[in-house]
Image (tube, rainbow, N blue to C red; front, side, top):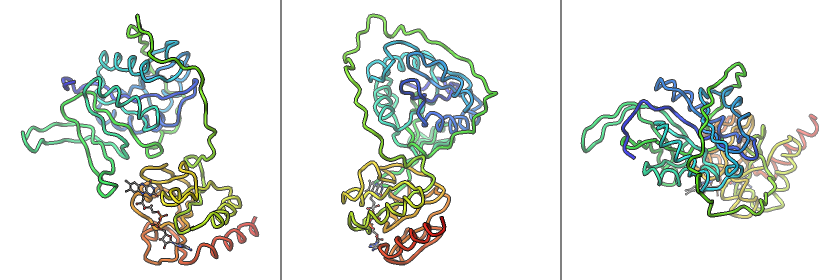
Length: 343
Ligand SMILES: Cc1cc2nc3c(=O)[nH]c(=O)nc-3n(C[C@H](O)[C@H](O)[C@H](O)COP(=O)(O)OP(=O)(O)OC[C@H]3O[C@@H](n4cnc5c(N)ncnc54)[C@H](O)[C@@H]3O)c2cc1C
């Protein structure tokens, strides 16, 4: 849809499941607050579900000025057809200028469905967002206050800034774990704008949920304070056991590089980096990881990084605070032993 009105609000999609908010809406509110303040407009959270109104308080505490609530039994569980139908209707009516989604499985399904219906474009998997001007190199037309959508491109070799000057809303999905939530301020309140579900009148969803099968989550890298990470240099499952011992001694989670996952040393959900999980632990111990740009993109914000690598020229040493040049099969058991002694 053509951009006709630049005074609209900044919105985030408040993803929830079974009445529990995901982490990502709070992260989006942190960045959304910054964008809305820069533009001088309110920050809205669009909340879809059934019986989810109590979540509005959490959204307000983390920065929302308004919650746009669509509460309907058909929205009790996420389905592409019902959620996109309701969201398209409320976007058409309220015309925010920006709408942000988490790059979660739900966000990656919902955002493109909505964007294609509104014909507005979408930038996927952003790692940063800002507000700035843009001049069209062909028409020389200048646009003020556009959403600057930053993401790695061409296999992570360049960082691209993408703008969408002519359509509304400007839509992006944002990587989990890269934006910081604001501390909760429980004294904050927000307006709740209720939307009836005219979009559902005479509508029968094309699919019916018969059963929900949930995969048990075996790793929680995102929330881990300490991560021991395995690279291809670990070489074998026996050596992974050495890293697991170190992780156990430290109370750490075990993650790794894409190469380690591709080699079958770790399950795919343990992958850290551009196409894996983004982490921000207090301590990250990189074992046998070379430090490719795509890996570093997912762990560079760790407060302290220790790298163990046989190659003194490995790029991982450029981001590490402490480096140990040595064979991990010797260094890791020594570290584990020292930590157990200390404890
Ligand atoms: C589009 C795209 C997306 C990608 N996304 C990701 C991503 O999300 N995450 C990711 O990790 N990668 C990603 N990659 C892959 C990335 O480019 C690298 O190939 C990968 O990170 C390399 O993993 P590694 O460091 O474990 O392996 P290598 O690069 O093979 O490094 C192994 C290291 O181990 C060291 N070593 C060997 N033996 C020992 C030993 N005994 N003791 C100590 N050190 C030793 C070596 O010196 C070497 O530095 C992506 C690539 C592309 C193109």
